[in-house]
Image 1 (cartoon, rainbow, N blue to C red):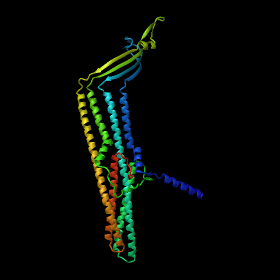
Image 2 (cartoon, rainbow, N blue to C red):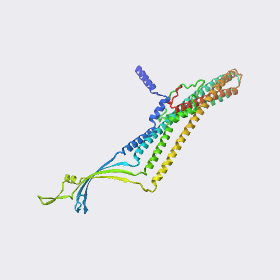
Image 3 (cartoon, rainbow, N blue to C red):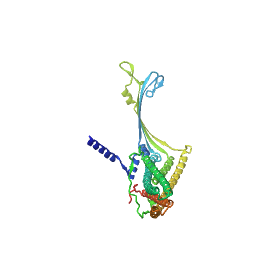
Length: 451
């Protein structure tokens, strides 16, 4: 029984380990784009545009409608098939089949299909932009976890060093070798650093929760991300200029493509508004027949009137019609002219929107590039600063250990080292995020794998 229990326990632990899924940045992005409700809603908008495009195409076909009616008339009326007055209850049946085809209407339907195709493209580009925003948001949340995780490790290392010094001083105080002042100063520093550890842990927990909520996961339990090697090396660089990135993004970014599509759509809308001034010509045809209970024939054998048979009436009452309908707009309250003016305004407005999108894209890339460059400069500067601060702290620690430095000076040196490490971390992750954004604008998939 003991062996069986141990075997079952091992199986449970192994299955638990396998169930502990590690989330990479790529997996987080893929999951969000597949399961995010807002993304699904955006895709439904695309499907709706596709359905409307299909309907616009089908509307170019001739219409065909049929109808049938069965009824009774009570009281005096003129029978439509006999042209005689009927005063009794009369049964009537009518059958109708009609078709209409538009021969010309200023190419309205053709242009409507063209416009719908472009509107569909714009909607698809808007969806791509929406998904890009989500992807960048996921990347931000992911990097926040990595940043606070490293910040927590740094804070814990600093606290551990202070605890070791505090324990050493406590032994010296207990032995009467030194006064209690330095020990109390170090204890205060230990309390402050412990608070920093708690704050860093809280920030890390919140970063985990934020990313989990962005993924629409029900809980943070069992959620663990991959911690890739993000060491930048001693000489990270920006291999391309902001203008080169902008030139590439101008040709590929969905926000620009969407704005360009909307300009084209508005121009077709103007053509459609102008087409309303053209005459329209349509061809109409119909087939019809019917039955009347008032249509009676004299029976030569019984010398009485009997209702004419249904089949005979349907055959005899069969009628056909065909017509050409011409509609020439002459005056309709100036609405056509107003619609043309509004369409022209819309064209200009969409062109302005395109220019604004280009300006905003340029500003975004320029800002990201400037931030990446500044972060890179800060990182390179911080590398030197950390090395110097670490050497200074190591020397101060040696002096403090042998009693050649007081606790105040020791703490100041330690704080300088902590600040240098913190500045290095911030510059590092600022550069990683901004350079990742710039890579994204260059059409590269979001990834934290260093090239």
